[in-house]
Image (cartoon, rainbow, N blue to C red; front, top):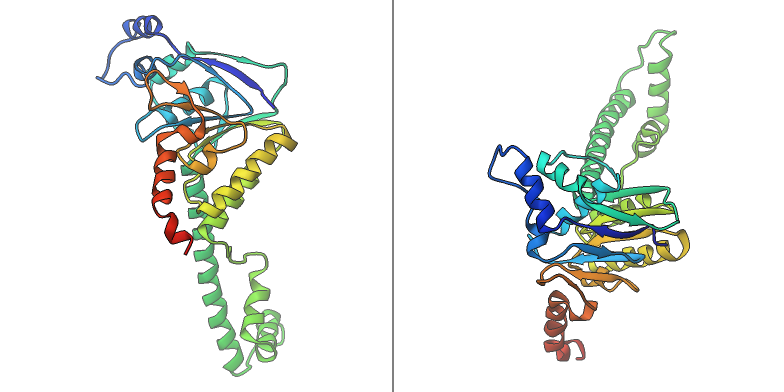
Length: 285
């Protein structure tokens, strides 16, 4: 489902006029001059559109420009600069007659923060388990000398003497159970939880924190979300798995001028291909 149809970046004349009208407070005019140098102005979109390129190619910058212009939601928005705002303000875009219920940008930092949250939960649960374990031993082996109205201690003492430690601890943890997924599994679950129906999703390098196996799983989930849940995806990536998404339109930000390419013709993908082709005999032993 296509919601965002076209995006127009600034040309050299627009950039010159905006910079000339602004008071220079530092030497950086980011993100000006990045995409005019690459001769990129008009971007057309499909159900899945990918921006490919190496570090420093402008992939993340381009995603942030698009996201800010279409008012996509951020999990954690950081104001970039007055120059960034001025650049975004003069960009333009076209949408189809379809109306997206949501536009959201999700970065690899959001995934890492989620993993850190899970780690913090696990750390808290482990500390709580140790505390309850110590209480269990105290109740189990202490002499009963509680007042008749000390219901809590009497109850805990009775249960400690009649239950195993694991059961005693488990019952007191309630729903604060350990999250037992690996980082990769937790990252995959994060993506699947965030992606809902009838929406535009802007994903910044979703391959981070994912094994090859989980990248393939997320690739299939994205394709299904387009096919069955009316989602549109705009993705920055250099992963061959995401570059091979069905019917993806791919812009090569490493080329000047920027052009669209078939995923099998991208240098990073060709590097993988040549490497495994050289090792073909080892796979066929």
